[in-house]
Structure formats: C-alpha cells, structure tokens
Length: 385
Image (cartoon, rainbow, N blue to C red):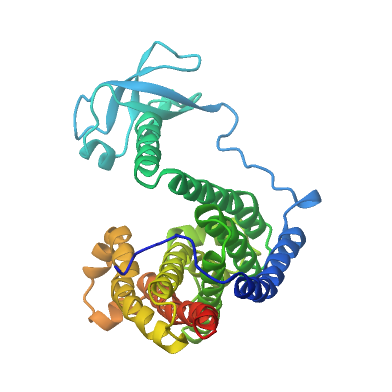
C-alpha cells in the first residue's frame, strides 16, 4: 500500500462491534458538531453589524473595459486602447500603464480594465490601467479542472469539489465578515475550520466509521496546531505585520489584532494537508485490518505507522516548498541585504512564514500517529474478539 492510498472499500466489522464503534465515535463527534453549530450561531455576523461595502471609485470616476489596439513604445508607459464600455465606447484613447505591465508583454487584442477619471485630461490621460480581463481563461481552466476530476475520481471527486465549494462559502460568508467586525480571530478560526472540516470530509468521503475516525484525527491536529501557534506567536513576539496587506488591515480595521489574525491564518492554512494525512492514515489502518483481521491493536498500529512515516517524510517538505514557491519575490528582495542567513530568517517579513510552516508541519506530523492510534483502537477491538 502506498503512502497516499485513500481506500474507501467496505469495512468488514461484525454488526455488534460496528454498533459499539459507532456509539463511541458519535459520543466524540456529536459534541464537536453541536459546538460548531453553536459557535456559528453565536459568532455569525448579522443585524446592526452588517458590513457595508466601500465604493471603489469616487464621484466622476468609473471602471471601463477596453481592448488594446497598439503599444507605441515599451518605455512610454502608455497604451492605445479602444474603449468598449461607458460614454466613450468606440473611441481610441491613451491609457497610462505601469512599466512592469508593459515590460511583461502587453499585446494588441488584450482586453483590460481601466479607471476613467472625468476631468483628468488636463494633467494627462483620464484613463488608467487597472488590470487585465481574464474571465475566459480562468473559466476554461476551472472547467478543465472539473472535467479531469470527474473523469479520474468520478462522483467522489465531484463530491470533494462540492465540499471545497462549501468550505469556501464558509470563508466568504462567515470567517471574513466576522474578522472584519472584530470578532476574536481565534474563535473564528476554530469554529470556521471545524465547519469546513465537517463539510469537506463528509461530502468527499461519505459518513462512515473510517471517515469519522479521520475527522477525529483532523481535530487532534487542529488542536495541536492552534496551541503551538498560539505559543509560538507569543514567545516569538510576532506582531503579524510582515506584509503590506497587514498594514492595510491595521489601517482599515483598527480593532483587529494582527497577531491573532496571524494565528487564524496559520490554523486555516494547514487544513487541506491535515485532512489529507488523516484520511490516508485512517484508510491505511482499515485496509490493513481487512487484509489481516486477526491482527491486534499494536500490530496494526505499527504496520500503519510504516506507511505514516513515508507520509511524514513527504509532509516535511510539502508546506516548505509551497511557501518558497509563493514567496519568491519577497525572498529575492530580502536576500540582497547584507546580513547573515539567521538574521534573514528572523527578519519580520520572513519569520512569520517560517513559524507558519513549522507550526503547521508539526501539527501535520503529530496528526498521523494520533489518527493511527484512534483507528487502531477501534479496529483492534474487532481483531481481538
């Protein structure tokens, strides 16, 4: 069995034993579900605290679309664009664009979004480049993703996508609004993560003894990540201001604690990988039990941990590689300063991600033996009948 095998065949457990296992799991999971629902109700942003959207433009300004007709010079900072919307539709206008956008290769035919500011013509073009219009390629990529998932994983894969969608809805309608309103980021992270896990795990893998065991392992890893993250942020005096976005949050939402928001991000960031390792380990235990029903708890645990160690070996670098890949510009800028490697890693803009990676990785690694132990205890009862 490979380290990432996610078997989901029927678990052969005598009926009486299966009932006892379900009772034990229900006694553990139902209170967690109730606490999650109560938390959602108590923390849900509503009533007079409804969030008002801030306008993106001032009076006399509007967002318009246009298609690039010509790029007169790669050094001029301007594009010739045919306006597609608004009162100037059909006209060719000059549009100011950042040098880095032009340097990356703007081509005739590219569709862009522009900010039109009435009355700005006296000081230059009233049109300013905002962004590219990329709806179609992103929609095509999303459709390709759904097609590949459906062809390879079939209904189970589509159910997982549905679980992902539900989790993102929770982020959009609960987590972000609650954080904006100043609700405790730690409580929001715990309640939101719990709700996301219930949706993702049960929609993707169905309600069963195996998936419920994995869910318990996920909660164990979540608790470890939260506690360790809390300690690391406090002991390391991490303020949470290691990015430009943090300063924007501080100025826009003065009541939000940046360090607490950092902890919230650490908890949520590790959920996907955490769920992966717990599902894998739960599946490994049940499959090993199916091949040798006479094996006892300790034997099953040791066999499953041999698989788990392979998973740990890959987990050690999974999150680190993800961080390096998404933070290359920051790493490049930080690397040019004359300082030691330790000073570089301990700098404010880097250390937050170092701590995020370490805390999440520790939670993932410890979730593997926790899930394996829970699963082995359950199947071991059957083996020793």
